[in-house]
Image (cartoon, rainbow, N blue to C red; front, side, top):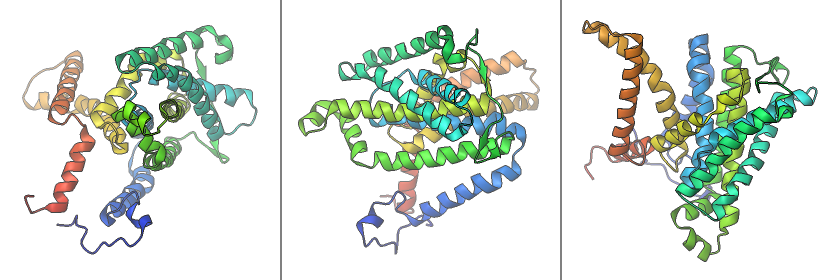
Amino acid sequence: MFYRENGQFKTSYRADQQILPIRQDRVVMALLLVFAFAVVPMLATDYFFRAILIPFLIMSLAALGVNILVGYCGQISLGSGAFMAVGAYGAYNFFVRIPGLPLIPALILGGLCATLFGILFGLPSLRVKGLYLAVATLAAQFFSDWMFLRIKWLTNDSPSGSVSVAELQVLGLPIDSAQSKYWLCLSVLVVVALLAKNLVRSAVGREWMAIRDMDVAAAVIGIRPMYAKLSAFAVSSFIVGMAGGLWAFIYLGAWEPAAFSVDISFRLLFMVIIGGLGSILGGFLGAAFITLLPIALSQILPALASLVGVEISTAGVSHAELMIFGALIVWFLIVEPHGLAKLWSIAKQKLRLWPFPH
């Protein structure tokens, strides 16, 4: 009864096309941002920041980039880990080779390096699709592993490919505490999510969705498949590359090529599928599911075992986490193959009509 549109009239095209057309959504979003920026830093501990919130924010950013390519443009990609690695090492090289370069420009330049890398490995999308494209993008993963292990210049002549950064600053403010790292990741995520939301609602986003639905029909009505596909690879790779830079600079601090293995590519793809393809919200929900649920299970399972008087080892807890986690993924895909974002959309629609049954 509180989620109604009664009395909310739109008298201009601008009002009708705004991102959150319902007043209640705008209020909730404003409260959520205030809570995230002001309340959470006062309540959370350093462990909560470093182990849960910061990786969740960075993975949400990466999932958002993958969703643009896979969800909006329909191009299957298994090279997200490689794009993150290129973004991380690109930002690192700019950061250490240009004295006094600020952190944010270094991350943006690393994202541009990932953009060029993504366009290069997006060229096969002009000729192949489906599983063939997935294999072609998977080649980017193995190429990046070889590149950062064999080309020593990219790792500042490090024999193992391991590098590190220190004394990070943004606008003269040091980024060394857990709170400052959280604020930086949250600010980047909010800005990029807003830009991505507007981009997918623009003419470019509609071209991506037309290519996703039927590329032959899109070409017939005048959409250029080459431009649409490569632009999706470029935008997606830029966002994923920035996420890789944040993952390396902010979360890890010191890293090697193994930190961006093929496992992270599969995790990002699972986040997009579970969260909801073709939805900006789906990236956040999928990242929450993949990142936070295993941590919650690791805390809940031992407590439940102690309540029923059952002794369970650490290895047993780990195996039970994997089984429950896998079963929940399968259950969600069966119940709602369009992801958690679709469930949220259905719930909002029902609230708009409640208590009426139709």
